[in-house]
Length: 316
Image (tube, rainbow, N blue to C red):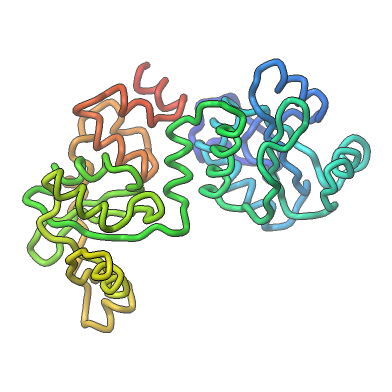
């Protein structure tokens, strides 16, 4: 099976290679990869992969290793090296050197130019967000800058994301204000009953509910705060006054006789972003939230959240 490069619209030459390895252009020689890493200073992203592989290996290649953010970060910030974990010769030698099992699921490791591990090996990192987080960690450990789009990709893939809705006079303004807050992974304009609100997805490990409540009030974007019923007790213990949020499709909403939240029409979403050069870029959720927050007030900061191919498109 080959990866259909057209489906992601990447601005790069066509890549025809096994689906298990995605769209990244790989170095196949481990020693050549180390040499290239020493010359450039870019860490080695070392993939051990089964080729041809099982359905899980194919899904990892088709989804994770073909995600534009992963592809562009791997090629621009790392030296990507591929080792087949089911082949003889040099592949088998490198496999043995690292003690990796043959015919295994994919494992990604991060090395410096001398072959030393930058961060500890981790198994079962098979989703886009966790892989992006490890890529960012490896870059920091190597003393390299982390592109903001990679941090955003890691943020929106966190497993601890929570949801809150904040009421305000105008969700067009509120969505931009809340999108600026660190730890906010996505925003959406909507309604709780008749009230305009912004639904916020955020990482409590980076932004607590109490901090969200305080910062949103300071930004004039928090006349009332709503959380799901399961989060009401935690809000009260944190000293945050919150009302009940019932989202469509949730068990709590069905038990209460229906949701009290509804999404605003498409024309009300990301209002600040509309009509700008970035509005048609197909932004990820976190990218869209940050771009909408900054594009009217600090264009340089907004552009910093774009991938290289996206930046080339808006500047072209």
